[in-house]
Amino acid sequence: LAFDDALFKIIPENMRNRGRIVLDALLSPIKDILSRQKFLDDPLSDLQIELLCQVLSSMDTDKDPKAARVGEREARIASPYISKLTAGFNHGVGRSGQLTGAQPKAVGATIMQQVTNHVALDAIRALGLPNVKHGLVTPLSTGMTIGLVFAALRRELGINQVLYPRIDHRSPHRGIALAGLTEIAVPTVLEEDAVRADLGELEHLMENRDNFAVLSTTTFFPPRESDPVKAIAKLCQEQSVPLVINNAYGVQSEEIMKKISSAIDAGRVDAIIQSGDKNFLAPVGSSVVVTPEKVTTDWIAESYAGRATAAPLVQTLAALLALGHKHYSRLQNLQKENRVYLETTLNSLASEIGQRLLSVDNPIACAITMDGLDVREIGGKLYNERVTGPRAIELGELGSCIDNYPHSYLVMNAAIGAKQHDISNATTKLNKVIHAYSGSA
Ligand SMILES: Cc1ncc(COP(=O)(O)O)c(C=O)c1O
Image 1 (cartoon, rainbow, N blue to C red):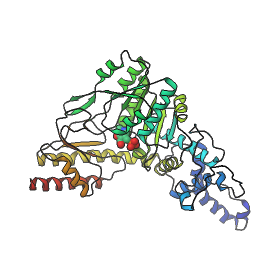
Image 2: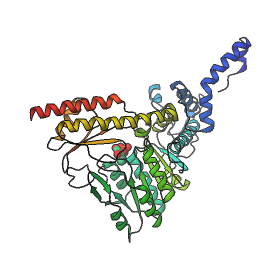
Image 3: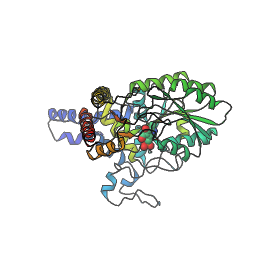
Image 4: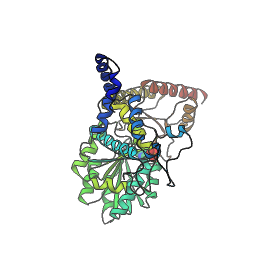
């Protein structure tokens, strides 16, 4: 990234110095990222991120004008646009059977991957888990990453069952099944409006059982509340049982991150999985796995079958660099404000229409009862009104993480990255749909 002095000799010295200042301002954050590999406070511009990717991907052998390429896989690309889709990292990352292995044909991608892993780990540490020491960005979304982590625990520790406090969501079930493990559902309990993991049942199911792990969840839709991860981590430590935490979109919540951090201090936590897209505003396709012990990260990297696409990794790196810690903190504050705003708005709508908010501890989402209404139809109408993301659950239907939940309800999220106008538009449209519905009923 240094400019040859010869170039500067053709201009007067005072201009030369001025030019260097401007160039340094552009390049020094890029040098900083490469040398320290940290989640920087300040964001990089798109130009800086693009330059970083250009420089690194230009080191891969498919860019070597004199290379004689006789392998069966030489990152031959059908058109330049296709290369843009991976930011030029056409060779992918890793080696056969080692996701983090250095790839001789892809020097730049190897550096990019390492920088991505370090920046992502640093971000998770800075955002509330200082006690995790190792990290890996997988080119897989959350459910598949759960599968990868359990495949590692199966291979290395002989785990063949997973005790899983009930979450009504398919991806984690599929992940467990993909790893060839048997899922044992741990029931939940209804305590007023809230659905919670039944800790007593978990303890009971752990007795006289061998070769199992526990999968615990921090973020889900109300009425389900976060699992008590600290208590579960203590149980796991007492009985030497591996614990995996699905922290799908919990990084945005300081409260959830604190709970996980104290679980790590108080008990046994083997790996924590977070979605790249839900937490860091990257496109769908990556997860960040962090672990207190290095060996766990190595096992996970070694369980990936083959080389991998670089695209989800570079996208996650770009998102982390484009955000920076300061802006992420601003977004977290907005998220908290939006969550309060969502609750206030839904509360007044609820009292207007004779419903109520479910009283559930959930830092991201709120649920409003829809008793006596056709909540599915209301959900469909909201979709037609161009509202995306509400979750409509009918009385007794799967989704509440318990059988026979006593309400129909609609969930809305105030997740990181949402704008206040998303929430005001969505709640205004909900108001409109419900009034039209009551008018026609
Ligand atoms: C708790 C939980 N786990 C897993 C997922 C699935 O994530 P993915 O689609 O990234 O596999 C979600 C949401 O979609 C979720 O809420």
